[in-house]
Image: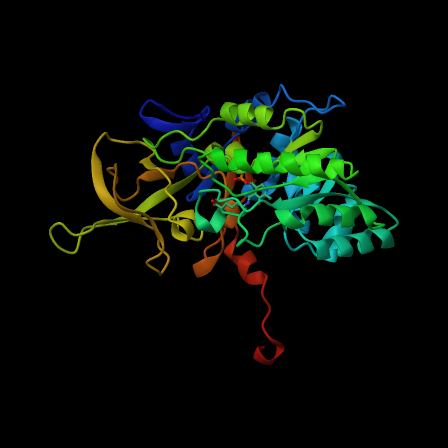
Length: 428
Ligand code: LLP
Protein backbone atom coordinates (compact mmCIF):
# COMPACT_ATOMS: atom_id res chain seq x y z
CA UNK A 1 0.00 0.00 0.00
CA UNK A 2 1.26 3.46 -0.79
CA UNK A 3 0.19 7.05 -0.27
CA UNK A 4 -0.08 8.09 -3.93
CA UNK A 5 -3.81 8.55 -4.40
CA UNK A 6 -6.26 10.34 -6.67
CA UNK A 7 -8.09 13.41 -5.43
CA UNK A 8 -10.37 15.49 -7.57
CA UNK A 9 -9.18 13.62 -10.66
CA UNK A 10 -5.48 14.18 -10.08
CA UNK A 11 -2.65 12.19 -8.52
CA UNK A 12 -1.41 13.37 -5.13
CA UNK A 13 1.54 12.32 -3.01
CA UNK A 14 0.07 12.30 0.48
CA UNK A 15 -1.38 15.84 0.81
CA UNK A 16 0.69 17.31 -2.01
CA UNK A 17 -0.86 17.91 -5.43
CA UNK A 18 1.66 16.53 -7.92
CA UNK A 19 0.45 18.87 -10.66
CA UNK A 20 1.34 21.85 -8.49
CA UNK A 21 4.58 20.20 -7.41
CA UNK A 22 5.58 19.65 -11.04
CA UNK A 23 4.95 23.32 -11.74
CA UNK A 24 7.14 24.26 -8.78
CA UNK A 25 10.13 21.97 -9.37
CA UNK A 26 9.93 21.24 -13.09
CA UNK A 27 10.04 17.81 -14.71
CA UNK A 28 11.24 15.12 -14.58
CA UNK A 29 11.55 14.57 -10.85
CA UNK A 30 11.42 11.74 -8.35
CA UNK A 31 8.92 12.07 -5.54
CA UNK A 32 9.08 9.99 -2.35
CA UNK A 33 6.39 9.60 0.30
CA UNK A 34 7.46 9.62 3.96
CA UNK A 35 4.18 8.02 5.04
CA UNK A 36 4.80 5.12 2.67
CA UNK A 37 8.39 4.66 3.88
CA UNK A 38 7.14 4.68 7.45
CA UNK A 39 4.35 2.28 6.70
CA UNK A 40 6.55 -0.21 4.85
CA UNK A 41 9.22 -0.16 7.53
CA UNK A 42 6.57 -0.62 10.22
CA UNK A 43 4.90 -3.51 8.40
CA UNK A 44 8.23 -5.26 7.92
CA UNK A 45 9.26 -4.75 11.54
CA UNK A 46 5.87 -5.97 12.72
CA UNK A 47 6.21 -9.09 10.58
CA UNK A 48 9.36 -10.01 12.52
CA UNK A 49 8.16 -8.76 15.89
CA UNK A 50 7.67 -12.17 17.47
CA UNK A 51 11.31 -13.10 17.00
CA UNK A 52 14.07 -12.20 19.46
CA UNK A 53 17.66 -13.23 20.15
CA UNK A 54 18.58 -15.15 23.31
CA UNK A 55 19.46 -11.72 24.78
CA UNK A 56 16.04 -10.39 23.86
CA UNK A 57 17.26 -8.27 20.95
CA UNK A 58 14.83 -7.68 18.11
CA UNK A 59 16.07 -8.47 14.59
CA UNK A 60 18.22 -5.72 13.11
CA UNK A 61 16.52 -4.37 10.01
CA UNK A 62 19.45 -3.04 8.03
CA UNK A 63 17.88 -1.10 5.15
CA UNK A 64 19.78 -1.83 1.92
CA UNK A 65 20.98 1.67 1.11
CA UNK A 66 21.69 0.77 -2.51
CA UNK A 67 17.96 0.73 -3.23
CA UNK A 68 17.66 4.44 -2.51
CA UNK A 69 20.63 6.22 -0.97
CA UNK A 70 19.07 9.67 -0.71
CA UNK A 71 20.16 11.10 2.65
CA UNK A 72 16.64 12.15 3.61
CA UNK A 73 15.28 8.70 2.80
CA UNK A 74 17.96 7.03 4.94
CA UNK A 75 17.39 9.59 7.73
CA UNK A 76 13.62 8.97 7.68
CA UNK A 77 14.22 5.26 8.13
CA UNK A 78 17.03 5.71 10.68
CA UNK A 79 14.66 7.70 12.90
CA UNK A 80 12.29 4.75 12.85
CA UNK A 81 15.08 2.50 14.09
CA UNK A 82 16.39 1.11 10.83
CA UNK A 83 19.99 0.17 10.40
CA UNK A 84 21.84 0.26 7.10
CA UNK A 85 23.29 -2.38 4.82
CA UNK A 86 26.03 -0.65 2.83
CA UNK A 87 28.19 -1.94 0.00
CA UNK A 88 30.77 0.78 -0.55
CA UNK A 89 32.70 3.47 1.25
CA UNK A 90 30.26 5.92 -0.32
CA UNK A 91 27.22 4.19 1.12
CA UNK A 92 28.94 3.93 4.50
CA UNK A 93 29.55 7.69 4.45
CA UNK A 94 25.90 8.26 3.51
CA UNK A 95 24.58 6.05 6.31
CA UNK A 96 26.79 7.87 8.79
CA UNK A 97 25.82 11.30 7.45
CA UNK A 98 22.14 10.36 7.68
CA UNK A 99 22.52 9.46 11.34
CA UNK A 100 22.50 5.68 11.31
CA UNK A 101 24.39 4.62 14.45
CA UNK A 102 27.43 2.42 13.72
CA UNK A 103 26.01 -0.44 15.79
CA UNK A 104 23.23 -0.68 13.20
CA UNK A 105 25.48 -0.71 10.10
CA UNK A 106 26.43 -3.83 8.14
CA UNK A 107 28.94 -3.76 5.25
CA UNK A 108 28.28 -6.24 2.42
CA UNK A 109 29.83 -6.62 -1.01
CA UNK A 110 32.06 -8.89 -3.01
CA UNK A 111 34.96 -6.54 -3.66
CA UNK A 112 35.68 -4.39 -0.63
CA UNK A 113 38.95 -2.52 -0.91
CA UNK A 114 41.36 -2.27 2.01
CA UNK A 115 40.47 1.43 2.29
CA UNK A 116 36.79 0.51 2.61
CA UNK A 117 37.61 -2.11 5.23
CA UNK A 118 39.60 0.47 7.18
CA UNK A 119 36.75 2.99 6.96
CA UNK A 120 34.27 0.40 8.23
CA UNK A 121 36.56 -0.50 11.13
CA UNK A 122 37.22 3.14 11.99
CA UNK A 123 33.46 3.73 12.08
CA UNK A 124 33.06 0.79 14.46
CA UNK A 125 30.21 -0.81 12.52
CA UNK A 126 28.24 -3.83 13.72
CA UNK A 127 29.37 -6.37 11.17
CA UNK A 128 31.29 -6.90 7.97
CA UNK A 129 29.86 -9.56 5.66
CA UNK A 130 32.82 -11.34 4.11
CA UNK A 131 32.44 -13.06 0.75
CA UNK A 132 35.64 -15.09 0.36
CA UNK A 133 38.66 -16.60 2.05
CA UNK A 134 41.09 -14.07 0.54
CA UNK A 135 38.92 -11.26 1.88
CA UNK A 136 39.21 -12.80 5.36
CA UNK A 137 43.01 -12.64 5.20
CA UNK A 138 42.96 -9.07 3.90
CA UNK A 139 40.46 -7.90 6.51
CA UNK A 140 42.42 -9.60 9.29
CA UNK A 141 45.55 -7.76 8.17
CA UNK A 142 43.79 -4.39 7.95
CA UNK A 143 42.18 -4.84 11.37
CA UNK A 144 45.40 -6.01 13.00
CA UNK A 145 47.24 -2.99 11.60
CA UNK A 146 44.56 -0.77 13.13
CA UNK A 147 44.80 -2.62 16.45
CA UNK A 148 41.25 -3.89 16.28
CA UNK A 149 39.25 -7.03 15.53
CA UNK A 150 36.55 -7.10 12.85
CA UNK A 151 33.21 -8.75 13.66
CA UNK A 152 32.45 -10.76 10.53
CA UNK A 153 29.62 -12.81 9.13
CA UNK A 154 30.47 -15.15 6.30
CA UNK A 155 28.28 -14.77 3.26
CA UNK A 156 27.36 -18.22 2.06
CA UNK A 157 26.49 -18.98 -1.53
CA UNK A 158 23.86 -21.68 -1.05
CA UNK A 159 23.66 -22.72 -4.69
CA UNK A 160 19.95 -21.94 -4.87
CA UNK A 161 18.02 -20.65 -7.88
CA UNK A 162 16.14 -17.58 -6.64
CA UNK A 163 13.74 -17.71 -9.63
CA UNK A 164 14.12 -14.06 -10.48
CA UNK A 165 15.71 -12.10 -13.33
CA UNK A 166 19.19 -13.49 -14.13
CA UNK A 167 20.81 -10.09 -13.64
CA UNK A 168 19.62 -9.86 -10.05
CA UNK A 169 20.07 -13.52 -9.01
CA UNK A 170 22.98 -13.90 -6.60
CA UNK A 171 22.68 -17.27 -4.86
CA UNK A 172 23.75 -19.72 -7.55
CA UNK A 173 27.24 -21.22 -7.81
CA UNK A 174 27.58 -19.53 -11.21
CA UNK A 175 27.23 -16.15 -9.45
CA UNK A 176 30.19 -14.23 -8.04
CA UNK A 177 28.76 -13.89 -4.54
CA UNK A 178 29.63 -15.57 -1.27
CA UNK A 179 31.55 -18.64 -0.17
CA UNK A 180 30.21 -21.86 -1.68
CA UNK A 181 28.29 -23.83 0.93
CA UNK A 182 30.70 -26.79 0.87
CA UNK A 183 33.61 -24.50 1.84
CA UNK A 184 31.64 -22.60 4.51
CA UNK A 185 32.67 -24.63 7.57
CA UNK A 186 36.36 -24.51 6.65
CA UNK A 187 36.14 -20.77 5.99
CA UNK A 188 34.43 -20.20 9.34
CA UNK A 189 37.18 -22.17 11.12
CA UNK A 190 39.76 -20.14 9.22
CA UNK A 191 38.10 -16.92 10.37
CA UNK A 192 38.21 -18.15 13.96
CA UNK A 193 41.94 -18.78 13.62
CA UNK A 194 42.88 -15.35 12.22
CA UNK A 195 44.01 -12.63 14.65
CA UNK A 196 42.10 -9.68 13.16
CA UNK A 197 38.65 -11.14 12.60
CA UNK A 198 36.04 -12.61 14.89
CA UNK A 199 33.37 -14.70 13.17
CA UNK A 200 29.98 -13.83 14.66
CA UNK A 201 27.67 -15.50 12.18
CA UNK A 202 26.63 -16.32 8.65
CA UNK A 203 24.59 -14.59 5.97
CA UNK A 204 23.02 -15.27 2.59
CA UNK A 205 21.32 -13.11 -0.01
CA UNK A 206 20.06 -15.03 -3.02
CA UNK A 207 18.60 -12.30 -5.18
CA UNK A 208 16.17 -9.45 -5.53
CA UNK A 209 12.51 -9.02 -6.54
CA UNK A 210 11.76 -12.52 -5.23
CA UNK A 211 8.12 -13.43 -5.75
CA UNK A 212 8.39 -17.01 -4.51
CA UNK A 213 9.34 -17.82 -0.92
CA UNK A 214 10.44 -21.39 -1.71
CA UNK A 215 14.05 -20.50 -2.64
CA UNK A 216 14.32 -18.44 0.56
CA UNK A 217 12.93 -21.33 2.57
CA UNK A 218 15.50 -23.67 1.03
CA UNK A 219 18.27 -21.18 1.78
CA UNK A 220 17.20 -20.72 5.39
CA UNK A 221 17.13 -24.51 5.85
CA UNK A 222 20.71 -24.75 4.55
CA UNK A 223 21.78 -21.92 6.88
CA UNK A 224 20.15 -23.69 9.83
CA UNK A 225 22.01 -26.90 9.06
CA UNK A 226 25.25 -24.95 8.74
CA UNK A 227 24.74 -23.18 12.07
CA UNK A 228 24.19 -26.53 13.80
CA UNK A 229 27.25 -28.11 12.23
CA UNK A 230 29.47 -25.10 13.02
CA UNK A 231 28.36 -25.28 16.64
CA UNK A 232 28.92 -29.03 16.71
CA UNK A 233 32.46 -28.24 15.63
CA UNK A 234 32.90 -25.96 18.63
CA UNK A 235 32.46 -22.66 16.77
CA UNK A 236 30.27 -19.90 18.18
CA UNK A 237 27.48 -18.51 15.96
CA UNK A 238 25.61 -15.55 17.44
CA UNK A 239 23.99 -13.96 14.38
CA UNK A 240 22.37 -14.90 11.10
CA UNK A 241 21.76 -12.26 8.45
CA UNK A 242 18.98 -13.34 6.08
CA UNK A 243 19.72 -10.73 3.38
CA UNK A 244 17.00 -8.91 1.48
CA UNK A 245 15.17 -9.69 -1.70
CA UNK A 246 11.44 -9.67 -1.05
CA UNK A 247 9.63 -8.53 -4.20
CA UNK A 248 6.97 -5.86 -4.61
CA UNK A 249 3.96 -5.55 -6.91
CA UNK A 250 4.86 -3.62 -10.07
CA UNK A 251 2.15 -4.51 -12.54
CA UNK A 252 -1.52 -4.02 -11.79
CA UNK A 253 -3.30 -7.34 -12.17
CA UNK A 254 -0.24 -9.52 -11.54
CA UNK A 255 -0.52 -12.02 -8.70
CA UNK A 256 0.48 -10.30 -5.45
CA UNK A 257 3.96 -11.27 -4.25
CA UNK A 258 4.32 -12.80 -0.79
CA UNK A 259 3.58 -10.23 1.90
CA UNK A 260 5.94 -9.23 4.70
CA UNK A 261 3.63 -11.22 6.99
CA UNK A 262 4.14 -14.34 4.83
CA UNK A 263 7.87 -13.70 4.97
CA UNK A 264 7.80 -13.14 8.73
CA UNK A 265 5.93 -16.41 9.25
CA UNK A 266 8.51 -18.23 7.15
CA UNK A 267 11.38 -16.64 9.08
CA UNK A 268 9.80 -17.53 12.43
CA UNK A 269 9.26 -21.12 11.31
CA UNK A 270 12.64 -21.59 9.63
CA UNK A 271 14.76 -20.02 12.35
CA UNK A 272 13.04 -21.60 15.36
CA UNK A 273 15.62 -22.81 17.84
CA UNK A 274 18.57 -21.12 16.13
CA UNK A 275 19.24 -18.98 19.21
CA UNK A 276 20.80 -16.16 17.22
CA UNK A 277 20.21 -12.51 16.60
CA UNK A 278 18.63 -12.18 13.18
CA UNK A 279 19.42 -9.46 10.68
CA UNK A 280 17.54 -8.61 7.48
CA UNK A 281 18.55 -6.35 4.61
CA UNK A 282 15.37 -5.25 2.83
CA UNK A 283 15.72 -2.57 0.19
CA UNK A 284 13.06 -2.62 -2.51
CA UNK A 285 10.30 -3.66 -0.12
CA UNK A 286 10.83 -0.52 1.94
CA UNK A 287 11.30 2.09 -0.79
CA UNK A 288 10.04 0.64 -4.08
CA UNK A 289 6.43 1.73 -3.87
CA UNK A 290 7.32 4.81 -1.84
CA UNK A 291 8.60 6.62 -4.91
CA UNK A 292 7.47 7.68 -8.37
CA UNK A 293 9.06 9.44 -11.31
CA UNK A 294 7.00 12.31 -12.68
CA UNK A 295 7.59 13.32 -16.28
CA UNK A 296 5.97 15.50 -18.92
CA UNK A 297 4.95 14.48 -22.41
CA UNK A 298 7.16 16.29 -24.90
CA UNK A 299 5.34 15.11 -27.99
CA UNK A 300 3.12 12.38 -29.35
CA UNK A 301 4.16 10.87 -32.68
CA UNK A 302 1.53 9.06 -34.71
CA UNK A 303 2.34 5.70 -36.28
CA UNK A 304 4.24 5.58 -39.56
CA UNK A 305 1.22 4.05 -41.28
CA UNK A 306 -2.31 3.04 -40.39
CA UNK A 307 -2.01 0.58 -37.51
CA UNK A 308 1.66 1.50 -36.99
CA UNK A 309 3.19 2.16 -33.64
CA UNK A 310 2.56 5.56 -32.10
CA UNK A 311 5.05 7.01 -29.68
CA UNK A 312 4.60 9.05 -26.55
CA UNK A 313 7.90 10.87 -26.02
CA UNK A 314 8.35 11.99 -22.42
CA UNK A 315 11.03 14.17 -20.87
CA UNK A 316 12.38 11.35 -18.66
CA UNK A 317 14.67 8.82 -20.26
CA UNK A 318 16.61 5.61 -19.68
CA UNK A 319 19.33 7.60 -17.95
CA UNK A 320 16.79 8.69 -15.29
CA UNK A 321 15.06 5.30 -14.83
CA UNK A 322 17.18 2.49 -16.21
CA UNK A 323 15.21 -0.55 -15.07
CA UNK A 324 12.97 -0.99 -18.15
CA UNK A 325 15.93 -0.70 -20.48
CA UNK A 326 18.30 -2.87 -18.41
CA UNK A 327 15.99 -5.62 -17.18
CA UNK A 328 12.92 -5.21 -19.34
CA UNK A 329 11.27 -4.18 -16.06
CA UNK A 330 7.64 -3.13 -16.01
CA UNK A 331 6.72 0.17 -14.38
CA UNK A 332 3.08 1.13 -14.39
CA UNK A 333 2.68 4.39 -16.35
CA UNK A 334 -0.34 6.57 -15.75
CA UNK A 335 -1.49 10.09 -16.44
CA UNK A 336 -1.27 12.37 -13.41
CA UNK A 337 -4.68 13.75 -14.41
CA UNK A 338 -6.36 10.93 -16.37
CA UNK A 339 -9.24 11.82 -18.68
CA UNK A 340 -10.73 8.35 -18.54
CA UNK A 341 -9.78 7.60 -22.16
CA UNK A 342 -7.01 5.21 -23.12
CA UNK A 343 -4.63 4.85 -26.03
CA UNK A 344 -2.10 2.26 -27.16
CA UNK A 345 1.38 3.70 -27.30
CA UNK A 346 5.07 2.99 -27.02
CA UNK A 347 6.44 5.24 -24.30
CA UNK A 348 9.97 6.44 -24.92
CA UNK A 349 12.44 9.03 -23.72
CA UNK A 350 14.50 11.49 -25.74
CA UNK A 351 17.79 9.56 -25.55
CA UNK A 352 19.29 8.56 -28.87
CA UNK A 353 18.89 4.82 -28.76
CA UNK A 354 16.01 2.46 -29.24
CA UNK A 355 16.66 0.92 -25.82
CA UNK A 356 15.33 4.14 -24.34
CA UNK A 357 11.88 2.59 -24.15
CA UNK A 358 9.70 2.46 -21.04
CA UNK A 359 6.77 0.50 -22.47
CA UNK A 360 5.97 -1.07 -25.81
CA UNK A 361 2.52 -1.05 -27.40
CA UNK A 362 0.93 -0.59 -24.01
CA UNK A 363 -2.58 0.54 -23.24
CA UNK A 364 -2.13 3.68 -21.17
CA UNK A 365 -4.21 6.68 -20.18
CA UNK A 366 -4.61 8.96 -23.18
CA UNK A 367 -2.07 11.74 -23.02
CA UNK A 368 -1.14 14.71 -25.16
CA UNK A 369 1.80 17.09 -25.35
CA UNK A 370 2.29 18.87 -22.05
CA UNK A 371 0.47 16.29 -19.91
CA UNK A 372 2.13 14.84 -16.84
CA UNK A 373 2.72 11.11 -16.49
CA UNK A 374 3.90 9.15 -13.47
CA UNK A 375 6.10 6.07 -13.50
CA UNK A 376 4.96 4.19 -10.44
CA UNK A 377 7.04 2.01 -8.08
CA UNK A 378 10.21 3.90 -8.93
CA UNK A 379 11.47 4.47 -5.39
CA UNK A 380 13.92 1.56 -5.47
CA UNK A 381 16.81 1.38 -7.92
CA UNK A 382 15.49 4.49 -9.68
CA UNK A 383 17.35 7.73 -9.03
CA UNK A 384 20.34 5.82 -7.72
CA UNK A 385 20.94 4.04 -11.04
CA UNK A 386 20.65 7.27 -13.03
CA UNK A 387 23.44 8.57 -15.19
CA UNK A 388 24.07 11.72 -17.17
CA UNK A 389 24.04 9.91 -20.53
CA UNK A 390 23.34 12.32 -23.37
CA UNK A 391 24.60 15.03 -20.95
CA UNK A 392 21.24 15.10 -19.25
CA UNK A 393 21.42 16.59 -15.74
CA UNK A 394 20.49 14.30 -12.84
CA UNK A 395 16.86 14.98 -11.94
CA UNK A 396 15.70 16.32 -8.58
CA UNK A 397 14.36 14.22 -5.74
CA UNK A 398 11.50 15.53 -3.62
CA UNK A 399 10.41 14.12 -0.26
CA UNK A 400 6.82 14.63 0.81
CA UNK A 401 5.57 14.40 4.39
CA UNK A 402 1.87 15.15 4.74
CA UNK A 403 1.30 18.55 3.15
CA UNK A 404 5.01 19.42 3.38
CA UNK A 405 7.52 18.81 0.62
CA UNK A 406 11.21 19.47 0.23
CA UNK A 407 13.65 19.17 -2.65
CA UNK A 408 16.10 16.76 -1.05
CA UNK A 409 18.39 16.71 -4.06
CA UNK A 410 18.17 19.66 -6.42
CA UNK A 411 18.32 19.26 -10.17
CA UNK A 412 21.91 19.08 -11.28
CA UNK A 413 23.00 22.32 -12.95
CA UNK A 414 24.46 21.86 -16.40
CA UNK A 415 27.21 24.30 -15.51
CA UNK A 416 28.12 22.09 -12.54
CA UNK A 417 28.21 19.04 -14.79
CA UNK A 418 30.61 20.80 -17.14
CA UNK A 419 32.67 22.19 -14.27
CA UNK A 420 33.53 18.68 -13.08
CA UNK A 421 35.72 18.25 -16.14
CA UNK A 422 39.10 19.73 -17.09
CA UNK A 423 40.56 20.42 -20.48
CA UNK A 424 43.79 18.53 -21.06
CA UNK A 425 46.59 21.10 -20.83
CA UNK A 426 47.45 20.75 -24.52
CA UNK A 427 43.94 21.80 -25.47
CA UNK A 428 43.89 25.10 -23.67
N1 LLP B 1 21.51 -7.37 0.56
C1 LLP B 1 22.40 -7.58 -0.43
C2 LLP B 1 23.67 -8.23 -0.10
C3 LLP B 1 22.08 -7.21 -1.74
O1 LLP B 1 22.95 -7.43 -2.72
C4 LLP B 1 20.83 -6.58 -2.01
C5 LLP B 1 20.48 -6.16 -3.37
C6 LLP B 1 19.96 -6.36 -0.94
C7 LLP B 1 20.32 -6.77 0.33
C8 LLP B 1 18.63 -5.70 -1.12
O2 LLP B 1 17.80 -6.43 -1.94
P1 LLP B 1 16.26 -5.99 -2.11
O3 LLP B 1 15.59 -6.21 -0.78
O4 LLP B 1 16.21 -4.59 -2.55
O5 LLP B 1 15.76 -6.93 -3.14
N2 LLP B 1 19.07 -2.94 -9.54
C9 LLP B 1 18.22 -4.11 -9.43
C10 LLP B 1 18.26 -4.74 -8.05
C11 LLP B 1 19.65 -5.09 -7.57
C12 LLP B 1 19.69 -5.68 -6.18
C13 LLP B 1 21.09 -5.79 -5.70
N3 LLP B 1 21.24 -6.31 -4.40
C14 LLP B 1 16.80 -3.72 -9.86
O6 LLP B 1 16.58 -2.57 -10.23
O7 LLP B 1 15.90 -4.56 -9.84
